[in-house]
Image 1: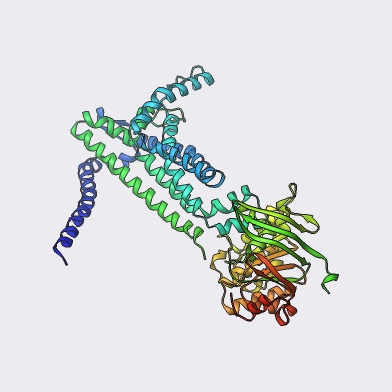
Image 2: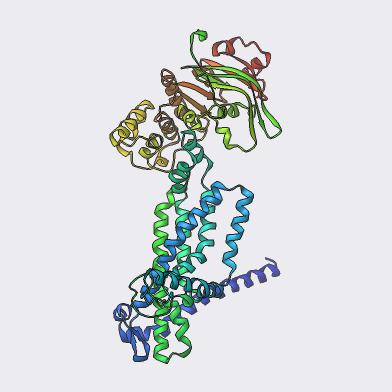
Length: 294
Length: 255
């Protein structure tokens, strides 16, 4: 082999090694810093404890887990149907040129920094929700900082992922299924709901999973609109603190033990995401047979 | 004999354009009920395009424009208020590539009936059994109706597609080279099936296989660059064609 080729090979190997090593290092670091307190408090008590009060050295992160999950779930409930409808509109209703225009507009959403979403939520969404709840319940005392605010902001943030992946999945459904359906006298709506969407389900499902990954990991925007109260939520207007938001907010002033607890939150987050991705991949494998042609 | 038969389709002076390109020129042909009509001709001569005009599948093609008169059961199917859903229910289609939906065998067959409003479970079960028996697939698959249709062999898939088409009780079945993706054994099964089906249905079949046309059809139309050069009883076309080009084609001198 020529020397220059060997050199290039070495360089790209080094690049690959660096990225693999950073994953390993980060994992080791998080676990190294977080495990001591997990051992001290006990992993079960840490995860199921209902009280997060670092000042009193009480570390129970159930409220934070509940916060993250409720906001993420809410984002999916709003974002997935919206994104899929949008994808159907782009792939099946609009002409190619208009679809391209709409799609790039939606993809532009992905380029907006999350702090801008947060700011938008803080200035527009939170006051609006506050007014709305007060209009329904004059003495509700809701501030607008809530699960719902976080869910709405996150739903908008995951839209680009869901829309573009679902659009691709729908476009990838072979023409022959469409033809078979139409040739039997099905109309467009029946063809879309009964043939095309089922055939595209594995792609649509992966879009939702990726969206979920983004939603649960998002920090800044959520932190700005959910109110960051570490207590178990009682309704969609309850303020909550998420795991990521808590780490970001408290890291700068945490005492050493408190800091360890924040790393332990990182461990839990890490494991939750691993479990979500793993099970999503399993389900996807099951669904996967759908789009294969014979 | 054919003059006694009722006409399913009457086509008069039909032109078809893709944008500025004229793909079909001045077609005139009658398709009789309970006949097998074969459309033969070299690739790209417009056979499939013509076939797809008969249930308006060409509506899906952008820039496709049709002039002339295409009547099904005496009605102009390109008239403004003609119901395209009813047309496609009455004029079913089987495609070149077997295209069962990625669903179970059962779901494939009940898809059409369900869309046309059949809800009763018992009726649906009967339709599944009747159509699968009609295509000779019942014995092979009755114990795995709820498994994916994609697990069937190519020939079985094509017969399933025919069953799916029969499930909406069409009068006419359009077949676009239904055996070109199949092996010889599966092909002969489909050909035998077509012979049985013609007692109840009108069949129009596009085929590249001259022997197939000779074997299974009652009438044959020979297409060449967008025109029908000759249409007549199959026997006459293959033994004593009127047109010299037809003779050259069926004896394998071109195409």
